[in-house]
Length: 393
Image (tube, rainbow, N blue to C red; front, side, top):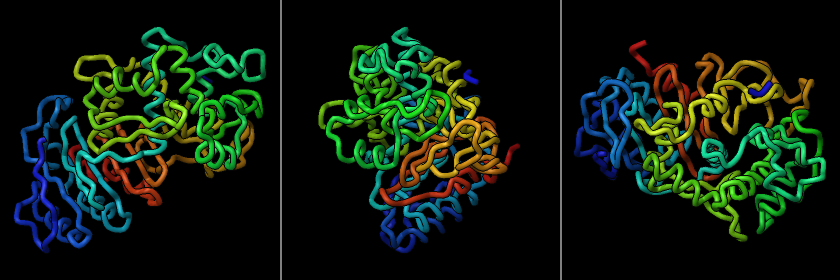
């Protein structure tokens, strides 16, 4: 199957000198996180508009009550994020309006950080844009742009296979997380030079090396380095002015990790997908590609995966990201959703150490949590933005 404005204050004393827009519950949060030297951002209230409000340089803002969210639930999530799970930021948007963002560990609204495999979802967007521009077709062989694969078993690998993580390319934790990610200076050359482990569509593996080959596909098809392509075709189109993508030592754009971004830019990216690729009347990514990416599993092996996005669809899903799933086998799978009881059409961009961009179409919300390397954040806690905080259903 294929198919702001904001008011910032540093909480260095036991009680802030400004009143939070969230009211007394938020004030309690500020006090609770004061000893950590956190920064809390409380957007001023504006009247919510009709439909989605797309941000320009600044975000339109609203209190939780104005957009049908429970401030106490948001405060509880934020308190957990900044306390128990040592986050850098947590932010929520509903109907395109910034409801609130919180900062800790010296993080600020304009301080970019590495978001690791959230990069994969950005790479997926770039492939969709390249397809809409006529530069490539995801159903074609990736060897059209990776000539080293021509005449080999890897000629059967399509671009769609790379997007779906069922390419069958050579993979092991040591290769992926050791040699390629850490040791190799030319990560694209190393990834391209790996062999074919199994036929495409017969194994699902979280294959960073295979996804890095999309850097070669994008450059070969568009004629532009993917980092530059991202800047002109994606970031600048939606105001992600504090975002960029790193290169390896050989000058290759990293497509499996490497995006540096801020909480509010991550919200913009989530809002773009929530709006089916449309940004205030401008089609940045075609809606049909967005829906193919997140509307259903992209393959039959792992129900929780689309085109480099994680899905909450029920079915047989991955258990351990360091092990593959073979087609027709139940090993390393469990039946259910990523967050049981959360909306089935919820989806995420996900990165190492609990980097999350959560999009929930039903509640029209985007939530972001970013944190330091080595941390974590439970997905069911972030899902509470949609499952527990919404008051107007």
